[in-house]
Length: 252
Image (cartoon, rainbow, N blue to C red; front, side, top):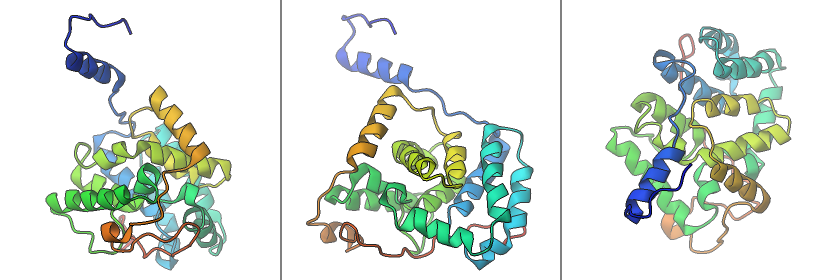
């Protein structure tokens, strides 16, 4: 990029540079399928209980109806494993990947704010965004749980609805990186989601590498007044409540 003239006001130069860096989000599946894809990803990132395991053929069939695209390829790679695995395997693997490992936790504000006071405020802001759009998650999950964020995006649309996904792109990328390092089939689900988000910038790459090396911010005191005691001490595993169910045709 050529240097901008110094005669331009600083705020204009800043906005122009930001506009040049900001690339439009791709739409590999087309607008008519985008909501379905977001719902499928939300569904596949929920705990694989007996109902979801029973619906595996329906889910795989829904993936097969998508147009040929990198998104479909990634989701099909996951459902190939998901539909053929022994019924006991996906639940165990899910808990190992998402509940017992902080580096692949599905709670997005953790990657941005860690265990700090700011995380509590970020959760409140996200919940207020949902209420302003007329959506109530009924307290079944924290508002930053990725399946919940995906369901909001599917319901509200690619503009405001997908804003939380774009805001937490680096966290999503870090989850994908951790799952890839672990050799988890769930890496394909995160890869499918990343195909729907704006491509990463060089700054994103540096930030994700730093986050992977150093971890999120940490602050072990003063959390309860901001989050109502929602955060466990570091290293403590608290099983999350199940996310609100997402359905596809044939799976209720």
